[in-house]
Image 1 (tube, helix red, strand yellow):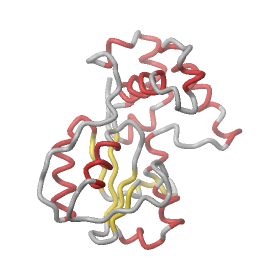
Image 2 (tube, rainbow, N blue to C red; image 1 turned 90 degrees about the vertical axis):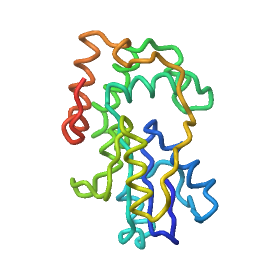
Image 3 (cartoon, rainbow, N blue to C red; image 1 turned 90 degrees about the horizontal axis):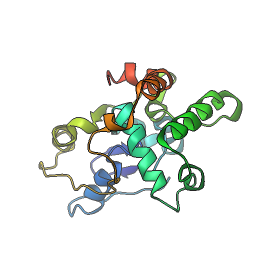
Image 4 (cartoon, one colour; image 1 turned 180 degrees about the vertical axis):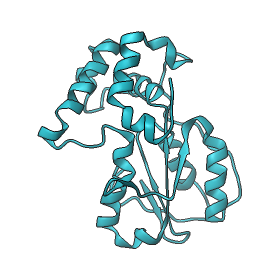
Length: 196
């Protein structure tokens, strides 16, 4: 998550949706000053509570196809020894990982855990509360729209934090795991209009 008071925008960083690349672009941009007072991944409702001025800012985020998102998350966590779930995921096959995440979703109402779904970051009172949602699959086009909106010239986005993984997410799935993602991420799939 980053905030730019000069240009009056805030970026909500949904993990593994090119957010590190977006952050890198703005952190290294010579014409703007950004701040990151609340950490990388906070929800829009949290941002508005912590910094009410941002309610009037242009807010944006990126989302990703949930099947692709899970493949990316799996490979990222498996390859990141410092990640808080590495000790669990590093020992799991992809189907085991999906079962584990699904069990966390099942327990959300008991544990109060959030941020398992992409929409968790973008909803406030059950409604989309960001001004623009870009798609990972059209990142450059959507990023240019964002730059135009905030008054910066269109430039390419650096590709950082790339996970080592198969070139197509579909290589990781069988019918059972495909259906599991369809069930547990149905809200994201419907809200953001994704299909396998």
